[in-house]
Image 1 (cartoon, rainbow, N blue to C red):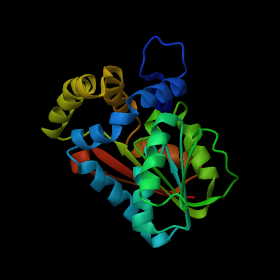
Image 2: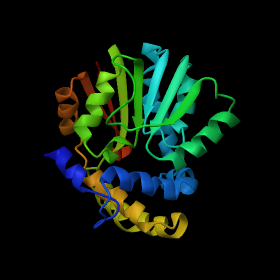
Image 3: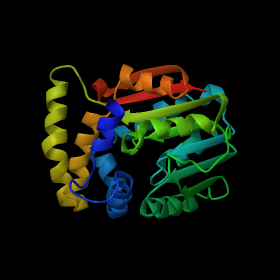
Length: 247
């Protein structure tokens, strides 16, 4: 039921486009302001969240890594610095985000290690058991069919490989819960309207987080699609969660 609810939450209510098409259009539109807004609205904490997620992969020492919903490549670039894999591949459905990501990769001198390409998370164009590790930061809640996308991630992961998923979650303790809900419901769309000039994108954000299965519900889905040893750790008063799972 949870994944069905996620599917119903779309950026543009009333649009005839599929959720996948709407997501691609939305991120193409806000690509140039996405990184700034991410850091601005999270007060820079999102960088620390990514580092904590990637640290979970250090014992694995992955040689090949897939970054799903890579966006502008922040996680891919950070993964290179922290983990030093031989090859990192990032996929995303938004060509606008990828174009900016490729510029960042080239500027960092990492074009021979990091490849960013357009790709659909629900039909990942790689053979079974291709990657040692998979990362996904703030992207799986945008999947049109959550279970299908997670199952694809499991399929292309090598046996014994590990997936780390970073995603927003809803705090449950007072007063963080109330402050968070107020900020997400009223302040975030306002910032999106003023800075990103796309209020719909930043109204969709809190709606998608609210609908997304969290904690044990998400762990159950990961188990269902084939993952093992699934864990969930909450960060910053429950604002963010790291899901770690092994194939």
